[in-house]
Image (cartoon, rainbow, N blue to C red; front, side, top):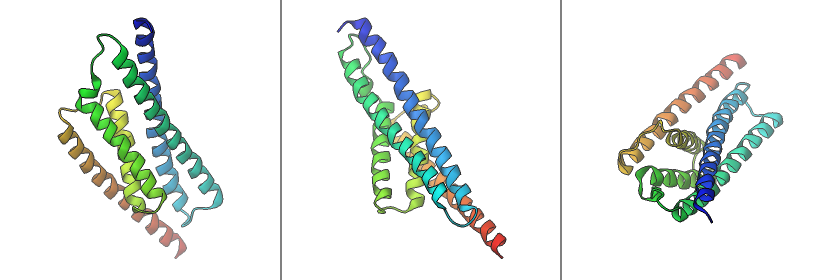
Amino acid sequence: MTASFLASSVIVLVVVHLIATLLGAGSITVAEWQYFRALMDGRIDAGERAHLNALFFSLRYALVLMVLADVVLSVALYALPGAPAITLTAPYWLEMVLTILLIGASWLRFHGRIPFWAGSAIAFTGWWYLAGLDLGFLPVAGFGSAFVGFIVSVALIAVLFRYARFLVRARVEHQNA
């Protein structure tokens, strides 16, 4: 392969990776919003459940696309002469760990091994951290500090989502009274 083809491929793969990440972050945001809207009447009906399932399909699609783009991008960068060794950087490893956490949390949540609030907070925070990394809005000085920041962010999002669920339940109880 020629260097120009590889360089062009790297650009395309970076764009595909960014699109997949933004699709995931957007889908998880819409999914959470729709979940709270669905709870407003006290239950999730069949139409709301179908809509949420479609959103979660887009999350799985985004995750698979992002992982495939990462793998091919790593190979292309390895083969490209003079390319930076991104696999030796803290942001790369943070992204890989977050991807593994998203896969693991999704699997655990699907099989009922972790509470909904934990899976929801991990997924929401993880996708937005990935988007922040890809867009350059999340500076990473070191892996450890960035990962601690992620854990703190998951805890904050979990508290915010818990409070939002409390408000929705209080509104439903008030309407039913």
